[in-house]
Length: 257
Image (cartoon, rainbow, N blue to C red; front, side, top):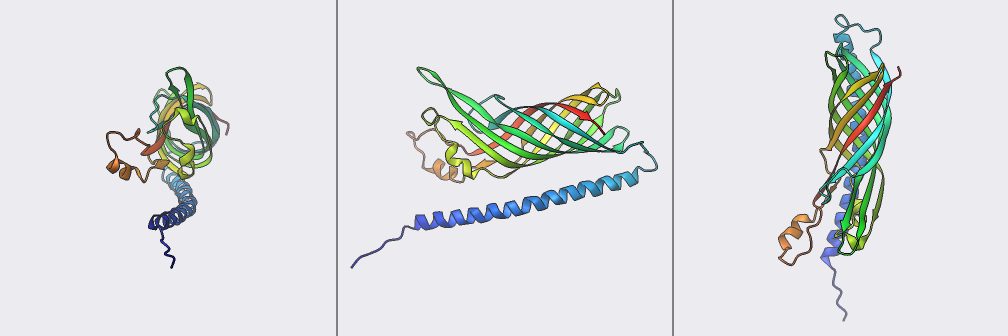
């Protein structure tokens, strides 16, 4: 008589994988709906404000458009590396509506490169540790205030982004934990807050600087608490718990319409 044993761990892993796939699919369906809702709200809010200020504020042209391009200096919070060492570019289009003589509402649609870059210094040589490339399609929504000097504008708001491409270069012998092993667990969507400002250079050309800090993590280690409970004095280095993006952007903005 042959006895067959089933490993409940495998069953749980299979169920967890299917459950995770279901959650990911639901998120993919939910995000476009949320984005459409935000865009509709943006449009209705603009029309409402236009009607509200129609008698008090009548500019020759209320709606404007522009192009924005710049350099990202990025890093990842939680990857055990420090410094804005990962360079990338950002480029996109802007839609602007004037709300008052010194206030405007702006929406951007941009492509932005984020990630991190770090090195591991060994005993005999200095080797490249890893380079993480995270490319996003991003939709920032911003409120801008023009100072009385008519040269400086301050801006703040939120950004909604979708991960469209990843690229990882690493030398496993020089790193404690591999990003390649967790790449498929990176979340598709990200929400962040933005704060910055710009200065007028010439007519409609502006030079600006902004910081973009992730509110949501693009990776969460679901097994971290279990690892923490089972660690001992001889345990290996601590694995990643949460990873999130943040970066600085030096940009040029030109309003052509």
